[in-house]
Image 1: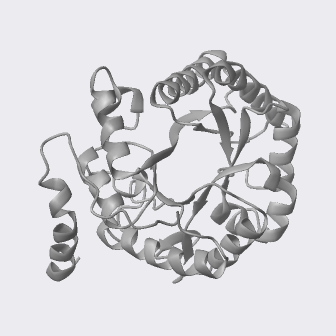
Image 2: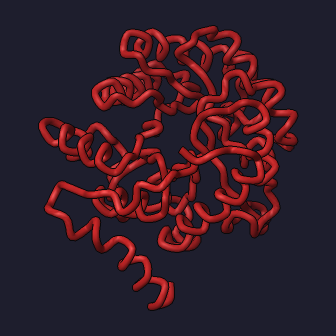
Length: 310
């Protein structure tokens, strides 16, 4: 990042960071679009910097996927004990919402000990979401293990989400399966969601993955799965050898503007969340560059789609 860009970013954060420890004040009460970012995009940042950046760049929501290197959110100091109340006050002071908590729990495991470990993580995150007043917890279906019949794995994943729903229902939390890993085809996701048949299990639509890995057009995916979509992941990429490299939104091959149009036209009322995978791909642009860029591009896309600020 250039010295000028870094200075501009730090200046934008200055007033929030200069507040008394543990207390941040909003830089602006201007209307905001329903955009958020995942903390996967800023893996080295502490909680105060995350809050100040979201506020300075006009975000409305945060998707919590690790804080300062700790991926188990039940161990993050700001979300435990007496510090949780102060954390919630800081969020409220800035007019920010935690859209969801991102767990690492996976529902494909066959080995009973491994499966129980994953179920336990999902339940701990549901309990934390309940304590924080957060509506959604992301849980993966994840893999179709080599050599296992696809139908058997899908049935096991659906059973796992039914168990998650049993724990989530009394907590007032909804568990979201993400279109991720080996579950990027809308037909597989529809099968799982239908089999679970619970209002406490829905979909996190990673629109990048259904387009790139699932080979589906956004309108087709939404036509099949739209009634379950409660949250989104948006990002852009280009081919990089046998893999993909994430690039700033609008610089790649993923039709993000069209995905926004499909969501808005379909009546989606959730957040348009930026999942910038800096944690897993450290070579991509710094959050100081990517987060302001996403906010600017999404203002263009959402305005064109008729989505209003609030």
